[in-house]
View 1 (tube, one colour):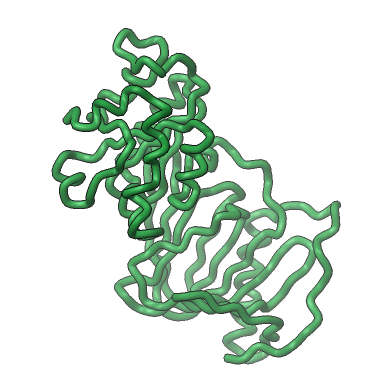
View 2: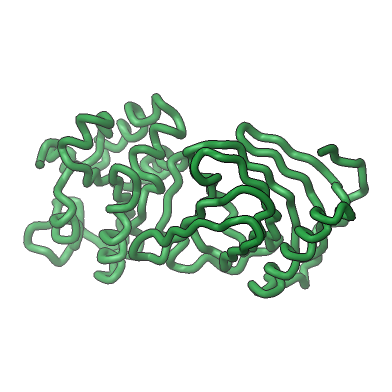
Amino acid sequence: MMATATTLPAAPAASARVPAAPVLLAAADEHAARVLDGTARFLAREAVPGSERWLLHRDENIDVWLVEQAPTTRWHRPTGLNAAAITVLAGELDIERWNGEGRIARRVGSGEQASFTSGTMRGTRPAAGGTALAVHAVARWRAPLDDLAATALFPGDLQRAVARGARVIDIRTQQERIAQGPLLGAIAIDPDKVAHRVDPRSAVRFREATSTDIEWIIASADGTAAQPIVAELRRRGITRARVLVDGFAGLAEHDPVEPLRAILGGVGHHRDAAVMAAH
């Protein structure tokens, strides 16, 4: 499928608004129909490892892309977190989203749709090692990030977070740390002890847990186990607690060397790193 050279519309006007889910779903469905009946216009093409996409439409509020995802076990996670809708044309997509307590996963087949509100953490990947072709309608504007989006930290942002003073807690089991490798500089403790150790009102808190404004990053094996812990911390008023997206596995996938150096600088930020082997 080849893209044709076409002048793209100008950037969105300042008066543009975030389209509602029904508008995005209708746009994805409309352009999916055009692809299927051969009337779609391909305005531009972009290719990255494992994915290729063609721009079908752009206006002041919405971009519409035809996206082909190659077989992979890796989740594609948009960092923009803009509202979006997807219509699958061929193959199947595994889709996940976070609800603040954990992941909600579903499989979307050919002819089916899914949508995401602005700020929603999510991921997509072709199901069962296949290829998936889908139309994505994406809002060009994003509403202010809600509390759910603020709970996530992507692996590529970990070093910057530590540099600004964030503390990292490793809640993996001893077996998981042996299998996956160490997260140097992290505080390793049992998951059920985290809330008591970082809550400044607790009698058994870490010495540096002096404020509810400290940024705590919770790292588990794949990100799943960290989510209910972060939800509990936020209920306690520790508003900067965050989940390391995809956990240690995501960190290793982002850069195989990263886990060995990612937070070495963080050791100096907290004396409680001495509890590395606490469980």
